Length: 243
Length: 89
Length: 189
Image (cartoon, rainbow over the protein chains, first blue to last red):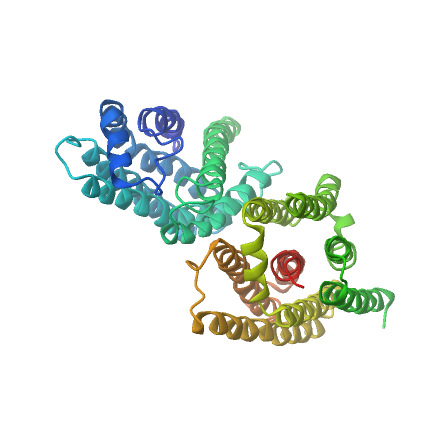
């Protein structure tokens, strides 16, 4: 019997693996909980980078390697969306938007992590201002390119809200919470305008609040995508058993 | 005009009236803590009117209704408390 | 069977209110450290314009609530007209807001002026985004039930959107009440 959801569970797991990896490598080793404040002067900043050079390098090398999993996870989400789209007349616009959004979001991980890796590459011989500029560049892209992820999650949300199952594949609260999260990214608009306070890259609003809810969203969609693919496989199995 | 439409219109008139009171309180009341208390109380009251009359929050899941009323009162009380603490310090 | 999914908009509203609540608290917390600066800066705001805009949104919210009531009774044409009226009133909000921003920017008050004005632009800006999104929703609702669906399905879907869209619009209104009170009134004389 052919299984249209082959590889799906594996891909769904990659999202969860990347989530855990991101906490350890981008977050803890990468010194990003919270990141260095933009209020530090160049010398203070360079001293911090020099002190944590080794950890940041390991963190960013691994983060670069695992970031492709945002895309592979996006393909798992795409599988679930295709199933819903098929039941609703087979218009694949939303799943297409979602998968491109997932691919682009991978780049939003990869380019900034490369910048931070470059900062940690030879900070001893580099000018502090140069280090700071490259580090800032990473954060500008990481925070302000949110629209790519917003597109991904909104397309997903609009699609899966049309799921006609008694118990939907993604519960309404997960969908609405996630759509709220990606809409609230608009607060990052103010990040490049300030050097300290709640809206800075390490501030209460634009770091702790925004990244807090972003990771929560990741957890929720991660768990329910895994469950959804399992359910779709079982539905498929049941449909074939009755035939 | 059915009762519901009249109810919505009355809620609108009520909201305009208490908005004016709140605005005048900010401009005219000399006692600052009385004025701020009144402003936040009226803001919460207006939001409660919107929640119950315009949004018909009782049609929402119970927990959400309770949460939104709690949020309204919470924001008003905490803003007033933080204003008070700042005024003392 | 399709489960009734319209109430899910409530989750979005609760979350959105929460995040504005967080912003209000952060604003009040920052204010504690620099009360004089915040009060002085807030005197530069035009409270009568903010008050006027609150009345504008309340009026538009009422028209939308009215549209919802008649829509539920199946009077879609009336609902459509009320939606248009709600939009027409609400468009005044945007005009006033643009004038207000222009007045601030023309005397050199920007996001970078001080912490108060960062919050002023952040809170009113994010609220304005919500407002613009809401205007798009009202514009869609003002079209009435979709002509591209079978009549029964179009009606059911229109009613769901009418309810969800109206709820969202009332949220835009109620958020402005807190924003107006906290930014404009608390520091006023």
